[in-house]
Image (cartoon, rainbow, N blue to C red; front, side, top):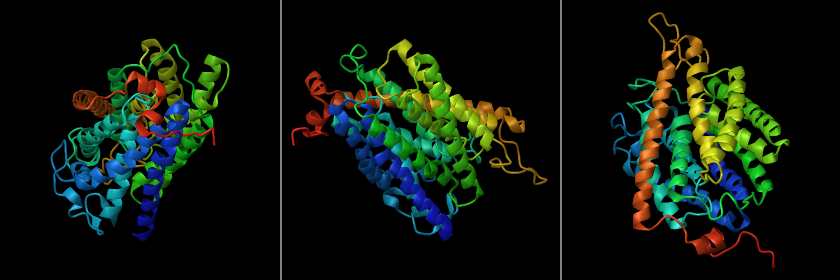
Length: 421
């Protein structure tokens, strides 16, 4: 038990590192200089706000015993969440360890959405919108996929969907919500005629590398113990990231004539996103293939689809997370094999039941598609309603003057860089 607990506490810290400093640096470097602090503050705010909401009610809504769609209220204020193992979720670790590990997922998921509305949403609106989003969209989705009795739970759900570490729960929900938010808010002033290049690729590069390292806690930690399944997820995570970085770089080299640092790190993140649902179900060569496909596919979504439709997803949250998460969830249904993870148990003779198409279970593709569709609809509709309510209550977008001045000064009264001192 002590070894499992140590690994899970380290994994929780690694996942928190993905938000701050990882995502904060990654997103912060991609915006214009006048918006770096405002952008980084959005990630940091999630570390505080979601933690409090999770302790009060979020964990209970996600992992309490409720119905097929949402948990109950048994763990409100963390009531009953003890230092002893839990038979449903934490068999070899304290339930509080499981609770805080899942908290780190709840923190980074809404933070991912901030990439879509970077440089144009009020800080107050962001805080209210994403706080509500974490309770009304994230917690129910987490319950449906991972909660006892959840609709999409692989162990006994009505539509058993394979999602090892959050392809639908984290990336599809955040990515689709990001697209809806970008469309609702409208484009940044001057977009796309005015050039808006990243102000510091160095910061983004460091952030992407921190995301890559942190993702080992994200995926391998989802094994919930320090055993062989964690090893499998760890290796698959690394292989997919490397292959996707290569795939995006090749596609960009062919399309633009030069391989860029931005393309390479974007590709790596795309691979990490795509392998997330599959990381604990597939073999290493399948992980390489998933990553390679994701690199090419997400490049296409960012450079072709976004350009064609002209929406202003500032930092490509949908093109990488929404598209990559959707792709990864579907490919999980193809490449999942019972020799890695007998997710559906065994038959009467003790033989592992098939998981994905490679095992001969073609029906799993339908289950994966259904899970993705539910995540898409829930995220799109829920986000639209939340945006409308917040917009009517306090307004979403900064004024034209504030946007021109930048979020750092207009929202926080400070600057990320002082060149006069």
